[in-house]
Image 1 (tube, helix red, strand yellow):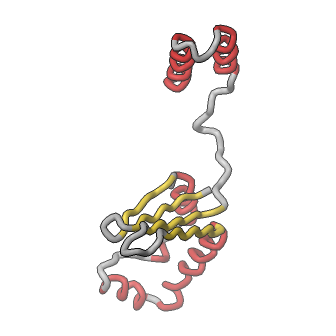
Image 2 (cartoon, helix red, strand yellow; image 1 turned 180 degrees about the vertical axis):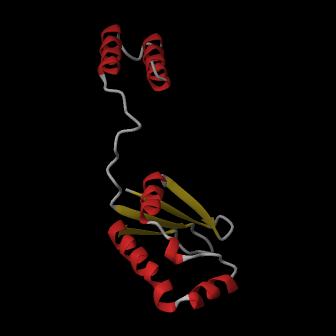
Image 3 (cartoon, helix red, strand yellow; image 1 turned 90 degrees about the vertical axis):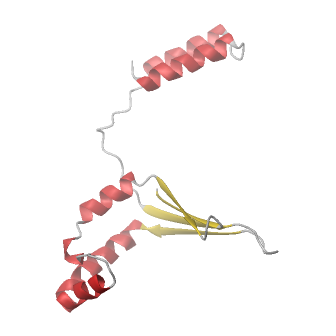
Length: 142
């Protein structure tokens, strides 16, 4: 029995002892848990299709709170990465040198699309505090 199954079973038993569900309901829930197919972490996941960026700015100085919600197709981002990967061939070492002047050691020619796909799948929801917590940016793939 996995940890999730154990915690689910405990939760059903807690609900039963608290009187929130009947014995019959507990039996049905435990049966459903037992019959539910286990999630296979190695099973292929459908790749995300969208990147959602939400920006929340708190109300202050008499201004109302604002929210901006942007949903970008990942296919557009993939195309941008492919286009960006051509820059080193077009502009040569000059572009790489400009990045280094800005303190960024970045080589666009070494970008691997499979790494970007993996990062998008594993992103979850990332939250970034901006302006000392007065605004928040949340990024997730869906």
